[in-house]
Image (cartoon, rainbow, N blue to C red; front, side, top):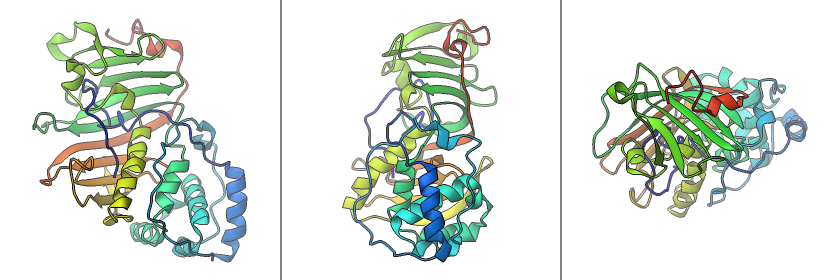
Length: 339
């Protein structure tokens, strides 16, 4: 349930949305300290007042600016309320429980059946609230991803395997297509402080020597993806999920059609399937399957299907690592690059 948007550049393929998967936002979650304290009080009894389901889902963009809450050292104590009792808590307590359970490793330790039962028991607004409060990415990070996108009716035989480095303030992106995937050897570079409407890139293969500047929404960009290089990252999927959520709620859909646990390319996720009543073009996809990371408030996987049931987009974030980059990382003269 995510991505109502205009057709965008396609030179970079990335989450298909993150890539996608992608933009920076300004909603910062409440501090873990106060959230932990409140959960400790409410969780001691293991009970709470269940909140009434509200028909509308939040639609504001998710944050990527709250780095501290996603740091490796942010490991709070596990919540006291057992997973089997979380559905009895109020909406606020459910959201706080999810945040603590994820960061403390509690979610990742639950078995498949326990995870499915937990998310089935939650208030319909708990997942959107948890994601909205974020943070849904890092201010500066590196990730590897596997993605496929149907362009002009063609589903690629081999997926793109990409290494991406991103900073959000200012927005800078470096992406490289790895040898074991499609478009091997291709590279792109974007820096909004120098050329906000253009990116530098070169194709792989025999055209590897040809480097050129091209518009973000130009024909070269659109030849490989419907998404912009500015969409690369984990944030965009969440933003689109929240935006599509309002339309789903207006259509009477406030819960996922199916919840299951999947392992995709090594990423174990809780997968939520949403099926739109009207399908495209009212919704980004007729069906979306979004895989929630078990330790952080963002989606690790995303699959989108058209009105005929054909998949047109698939993304898996394999690794996501916060990093601090120097200026050389986004310099086309970097000796490790081939611009």
